[in-house]
Image (cartoon, rainbow, N blue to C red; front, side, top):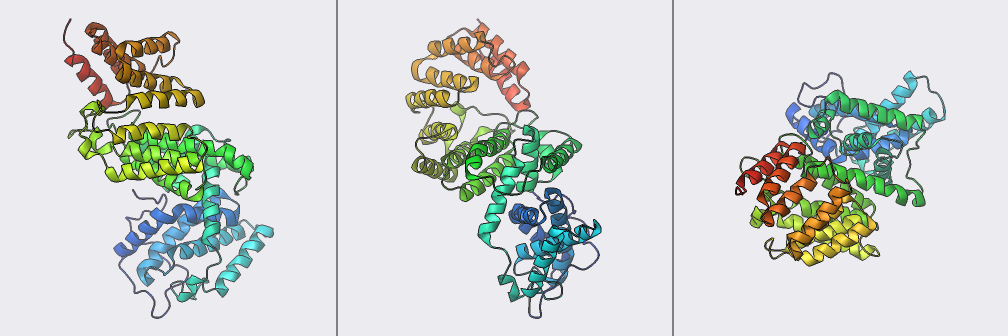
Length: 460
């Protein structure tokens, strides 16, 4: 996945020279294609840190993104001519900060902020980051920023992208754009919405943040814990859409799911003492471990009982279990994400559906229902009850949910109900329930699987 949203990295190198070059004896000039690959690689890994640091320097989220893109465009020209600098992130930061000063000059913003930025630029010149001193030289080692502060900037960027003043859709789009570095086209493709819609969401989000006067800073410790749930919720939404697409022709969107895992790993590194961050990471890793077995050769859905568990990603399982252990070690009991991860761990450790510890899964769902009640949790508990105690008590639970009007427009409840009715031999009712589920299901692959299951039932 390319991360740049602005300069076309596949096109020609922009005219003009980038600030600073390599010092004599520095990196050799390289081809345009090699420079493009180097820029893409740095941007893929470090874009969020660059934007976050520039947002702190400028105090302006939108300006920070603009000057970061300008620095990226200059890197395409400068790095193809002079070679990749010894410290690419420092190069992009220094270039972005100079472009920010230019922007303030154009606005005639000769205020304290401009004076501060100009002073910092002068400091850069003294440390070898100024124009003409050779950004590829050994002076790069003495940078006017430190990794600890950059980590604080990145964490602040996550909290701002998920700020409560934004709509849920805007939080997801802005997080993927600002923190994940995804292009608007990539976000639109992942969520099956038009590119202008994504661009409008991101633009409105930035303007809302500016209008609300949201400072670019970490929220206070007490507020940080309250708002962490919103950050985790956004990452969970991104992962869920990747692991089971809500619509379209593909059951999975792995790139989106893996991006959520990457961002959650970053958050876990920044907040190592927060158990639910590790719980979410564990849940994502353990769920993604099953991706290789969840679809067949033609992309069709493969149900859990039919999956070849030899295809499951055991490295992801190990990472998930390790994250779950960390969640247990740093907390006073598992939270909602940790409990879901514990359920996923039960599946990951079982050699088959029949050998799964369904009794433990029932208990875990009961605990989850007490701390995070929802109809989906109750429906999943009914599935576990069916595996542990038989279909009839589970059907009673599902019928209670239906009578209460829960999940009336979702395909999930009639899907489970159809499965239970089939196990009880009530095939006509089961077929009707599965056809109802197919009508409500927006995903093409999942809908086809429901219809195949309905057609496979024996006639009464």
